[in-house]
Image (tube, rainbow, N blue to C red; front, side, top):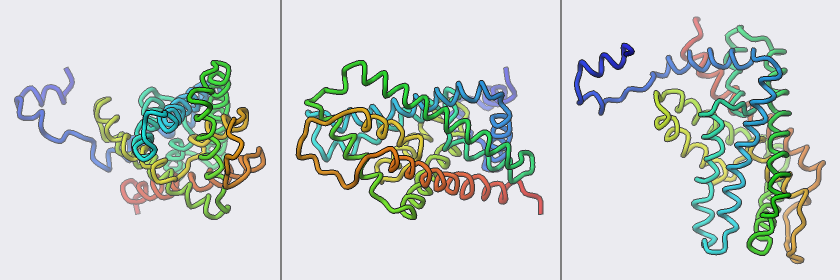
Length: 283
């Protein structure tokens, strides 16, 4: 029996209703320790876990797409509830220990502390991003060859292309800022989850911050991958589908670049580095 369990047993049943979460300075120490450990993983582990992460995030994006395209769900209701299903992917990825580029941006805390140099960070982020792309593309291919993509008279393709085109319609500066907001929410959700001591704690902490990202049209590069790849390899049956921008490999590459910059600033600087300075830095 752990010391914490002994204390609870000694205090009695009333202690069940007390707040028993890690405090902010404890969270900062945990994020620092885990981030350094993740960055120092062997490359093969990082690639495997990164592919798992890209796959899980894509399954969440697929779930959101399915809800939005479902003919028995009114459009207004679908827009409201679909982001909640999207959160599933990140919840699975985080709790199962998969690697995701956007949450790995918190490893910037290790760089700020001097325990990691900039090459360690660049190496890890590059490998994880590449592995996330592989994982997302694999899920898209599996879903494509399953034959389920034509459901609801190809409505899923129409929705995917519409969402993708909207994401690609922003200027570079707008895309960076949208990416900042996106990863501020993702990493703040992860930060809250690190305060929890159980799976339930972590699930509840992650749920709303992650759902808020697609709900408010913010972006993170790993979350964009499924929609982009799915839009590229499928053809819509709707002749008069009007899109705000063209979906091309070049446009997708530009979006991924600028969103990644925003994600690094939002999660790495605004969350990881600032909390390091507040709670761990010795001035």
